[in-house]
Image 1 (cartoon, rainbow, N blue to C red):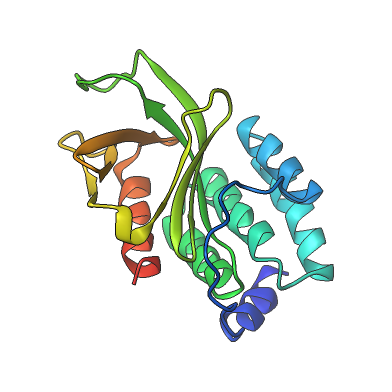
Image 2 (cartoon, rainbow, N blue to C red):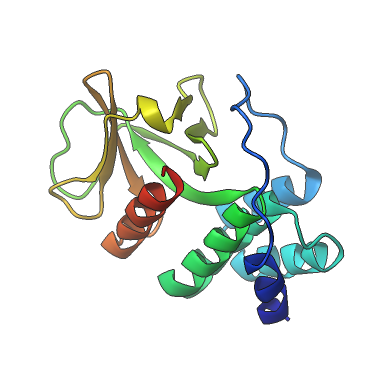
Length: 190
């Protein structure tokens, strides 16, 4: 069911470039539901719901971004997730990752002790962190990002702007997910 959809989307024309809005709009109901299901680790439910939606709306890039995330976390398969994320980007969406954002100034070891969770979104023209709670999210144009790089602990990565690092660990805490993020950032930011 997904293969024909991906074939069509890979041929899709990219959406016109738009400047990033100042604030994120509320997600469409299907995307909000998928986000909730992914947070609850109900990946197959999210996949089923998104595939049904995408049969009727095959060019919904935002829904595809969360389909990629659901596949990534359900299957731990970065190749398939990358294909869906790239098709999403071509349709005007991008890639979304459930991450832990560290509030610690120094990262020691593998555990975070002071952190929050949220969505890291790579979209056309910008990268955004949307926390589940709090008001410390951000949206940066790719030109504002001084560095997007893997940390010494390979499961972590950081985004640097203005001399300050924002440290993250993806949900899987697997360096393959971190590498996928870096690959997509480099591809989408061109």
